[in-house]
Amino acid sequence: MDSGISYIDTHIGNGRIAQEGDKVQVHYSLAGEDRRVVLDTRNFGFEPSIFYIGDGTVIPGLEQGVIGMAEGGNRTLRIPPELGYQKHELPDGLVDKMKPIFMAVTLKSLGNPYLQMQIRERKREVLQVAKRVNTSILNFTYPNFRWIGK
Image (cartoon, rainbow, N blue to C red; front, top):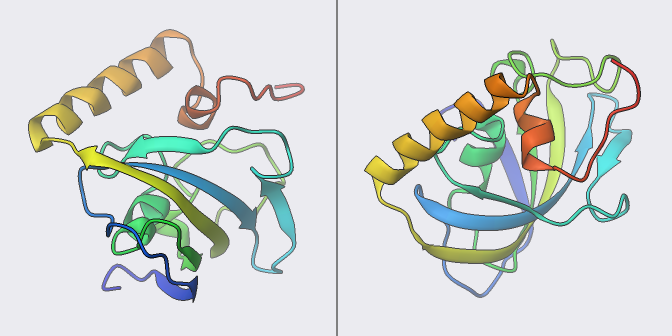
């Protein structure tokens, strides 16, 4: 990918191909540069993450990394810091925000394309809600997840 993201497809799905504007449902695991998994949505009881590609509710590396995946596929992403959590909130010490991160992504399902204008509206709405409740986008995306401490 031109953005600096690199990936390996570990399983090619047989469904539709994800593109900007699509509603996607993914499970993922997050690891730092040492490849030690620090978060896995499959094992922590999370529901799959649901977002529209391009709406800005998840880190840019994840949004860009699912583009081109087929529904049902698995992909491992290497995301550079500027497209990872460098500018996004994450609990201290989970991963080094200044180093690349790795995500293993499963594209569980793919919804209908979403119009660009609606994506821009949703992004503003999500950011306004996040500011109003003084929370991070990650917490907004996973309302059942609670951080312990500040």
